[in-house]
Length: 142
Image (cartoon, rainbow, N blue to C red; front, side, top):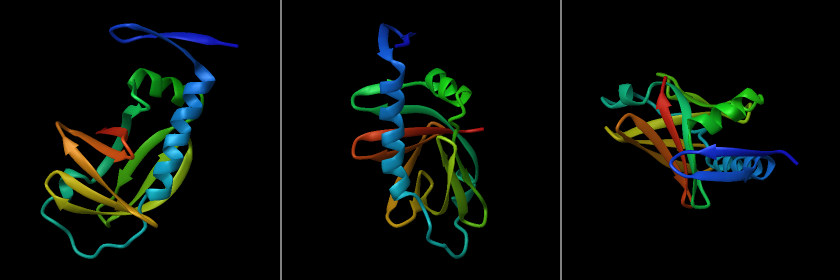
């Protein structure tokens, strides 16, 4: 089996396949909650959210995966992004699978992304965070 050493402030040794499976499982949970409700009109806060967002962090199971780990997954063909368009439609790409979505700004720092269910994403310091059952996906505008 292949093992990789990943160092942030401390050395963490992890088994690549196990970590990738955990991340993909978390994304699949989010995929069930991703957007599909058409919103009418625009909000004065829309510009805060319109654009291409790159996944830069994941928190799951008490562990944090930074942009370097996500870049490693991208190099293996698993891309992760969120695109929110001005027409209130968007696309969430999880491990290369694209999911259609819709969105609506609730206020300057909160956007609701809808599908069968909905999830609120919070904008803090230029990063858009989606939290589902304690797991977080952290996006930054490209």
